[in-house]
Amino acid sequence: MPFPSLPLPPAPRRLAQAIAPRMPVALQRPLVESLLNRTFAEPLAEGEFDALAGRRVSLVIADLGLILTLSLSGRRLVLSEAAGEATIRGGWREFLCLATRREDPDSLFFQRRLSLEGDTELGLMVKNLLDGREEGLAQGRLGDGLATLERLVRRDH
Image (cartoon, helix red, strand yellow):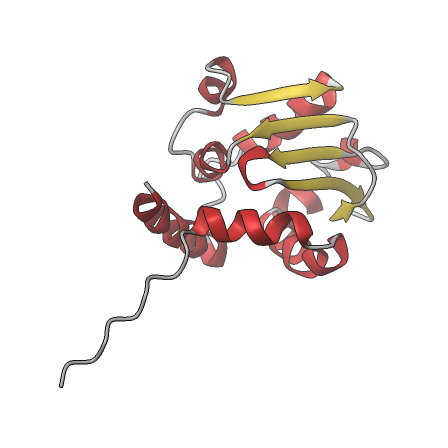
């Protein structure tokens, strides 16, 4: 007797759209902050993010309804519940391209797939810090997770 086939889990985009906007910052904080601080440990230690001290930048992943507002506290990136002074806005695929360096970050902005609003000097500083990482964010556990996400993206089409 053959086993009945199990239904496929929901596509990642649909799952994220259902969960992300409802997840309080307090639940996001441990995962997001530890991931960002491990990923950017070297530039944080070297003071490259010091201009973000007391400032806030929001990353708006519009198609998922997700807003992450980042600040710097004691040479650590932290999530803030306050609105950002600058906002980098785009879809999740564009942020994935930015993180993995699959596409040139400047091209993503020039093609208006990513946009910058508010304090442009602050937003450009953060964009340049992300862009300055030669290997992008695709290294270690984060890189493994991004590679998995890319495979799921293909399924989501």
